[in-house]
Every structure is written in structure tokens, then in C-alpha cells.
Image 1: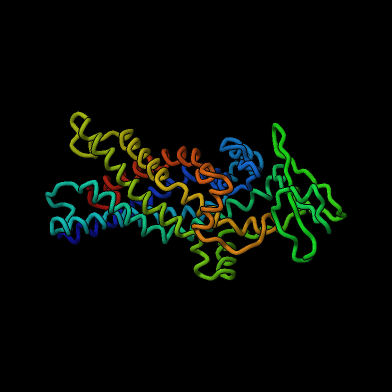
Image 2 (image 1 turned 120 degrees about the vertical axis):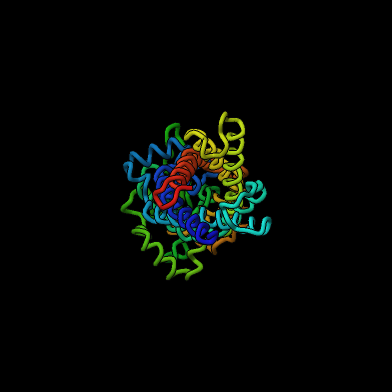
Length: 390
């Protein structure tokens, strides 16, 4: 009987998590697009982004240049991934709590008259479930990141501050300029350099004075290389051909750290907030007695805790997963960096602020997204939509 009850609960976790994943992703995705573009844009010598001046600027330029649909670029794969992620996450969280209940009380029954799990058990269950879901998320996020980022260079030609000037001999002016890309393989004796100048309103490309008669400009779409990817399937096939199966797990350490640490914080803060509200709300005996706004508030706090715990890991992961986009004619070719190398280079070039690029927009998106996810999950779990009411 207990086994059947647990199986039913696990299936309900699976179904409720799936629906919660869809609603959460629709709310989250525009914020995520802005965050990713801020994190992966080219950076100038002063450590500031060269394409966007902040989240509002990025949002406005995306909508003006690509329409509202630009905010949902690459949604299909993450939407599917969100369904799988949240279904798996809530199911694993429940199973982890069952396991701990067994070790502490000798039973896995969720209907037994037992005290609620300790906060230690809640955090540990969240950590385990997050670690497990990271293996699903890494390939999904790799596809999403590549699709979201590649259009930045191509769809914002007047904003792209990268002009390549190919010279037979580098002059004094060019020697002091910031080098962005090595010489083309078709012209091995040439060197290529970039410079930028800023005005009050936007960034404009500045040509370099040098002994050259050949100039290559990437400020118009027609002069840039063709897009690497045409859709999710294109990303997957390209990655498998180029880097094999493990290429799909580029940046996995960052995802693992974010999801495991974040999972513990997510479930932990939610449960802590819910218990605090139950104890301070007149007539409330469990979270079933809490109002909608209270569940959403607890979910919002949980979402901010999730993203705040190990945010730099997500920034480094995004950089690693989009290196190839910028290699194709925009930054120097080179061997792929390890997680530690990428983080060290980012810190040295941009300081602590570089590790928290996009933090504001991420926190802004995490509150409503997590509030919707937990509210949807709790509503579905309480209903008889998937069977017996719990």
C-alpha cells in the first residue's frame, strides 16, 4: 500500500513538475535571453560591454532589431528541457526525501505519521536532485546559448564595434591597439587588429591607420561569415561532428555547481519561508492553508537564493559554451579553456564585476519565474487532476 502511494506521489511530482516547467520557462525566457547576451558580449579594454550598456539597453535593442520574437530566440529546446528538468527535479527531490525518511524512520511512506523532514534533509535532497538534473541541462543549455548569442553580432550591425583591418606590416598606431583576432589562414603573413571608440550614445568602429591596402569590415551582415547554426538540430549535429558526444557537455562543471548548490538553496529557502509563514499565519497548520501570494513570495525568495549562491559558475559556463560563436572571425582562434582557466581569465580581464555580469537581470527574472513554478506545482499537486488529492 505504501509502495503504491509513493508511486502515485512520484507520478504526480512528475506531472506537476512538467506543467510548472512550461509556465516557468515562458515567464523566464526573455530575461534569460537578455542575461545571456550581457554575459557573452565582447568586452572592451575598460572591462565594459561593447554591445549593450545594461539590461534595459539590451532589451530595447533586441526588440527594435528583432521584434518581440527575438526575446524568445531558441525557445523550443529549452522549453522541452524545462519540462524534463522540472519533472525530474521534483521527482528526484521527493525520492531523496523518501530515502532520508527510510534511514531516519525505517519507512518511505509519505502518509505515515512522522515529523516533517529537517532543514538539513531538505537542503541535501535539493542538492542531490540538482546534481542529477545538471546532466540533463548541460546539453539543453549549450544549444540554447549558441542560438541566443550568435545573432547578436549579425542582427546588430550598427552596434557591433569590431572592425578588422588586415595589414602587411603593423604600424605604430596598430601596435598599441587591442588585438582581437589573429591573421586569417588565407593570409598568414598579415595581422588583424581591432579598435573601438565610444560616443555618448553608442559605440562606433574606428579604422586603424596602418600601411595597408586591404580592409575587412564586419559591420554589415553581408560582409560577415554565414551563421554557424540554423536551429537546435543544426547545433546538435555540428557539435557532435566537431567534438563528439562529450562536446554536448561543454561547460558541465559550471552547470553542476550551479544546479547542485542552487538546488539546495532553492528547496531549502522555499521550505524555510513556508514554515515561517505557517507559524505566523493565524489558523494555518500546513502550507495547504497558505494564500496564493504567500506561496508565490516563498517561491520568489527561493528563486533569488538559487541564482545568488553560485552565480559566477553560470557566467563562466555561458562563456565556455559560446566560445565558438566568437571564434569565427571575431576573436582569436585557440584551444578550448577548462573551467578554471576560463574563470581565471575572466577575473583577470574584468575583475569581480565580470563574474557577476548579468546578475541584476538574473535576479529580476528569478523571482517571478520561481514564484510561478512553485505556485503551479503546488496547485497541480493539491488538485485531483492526476488522481487522488494529497
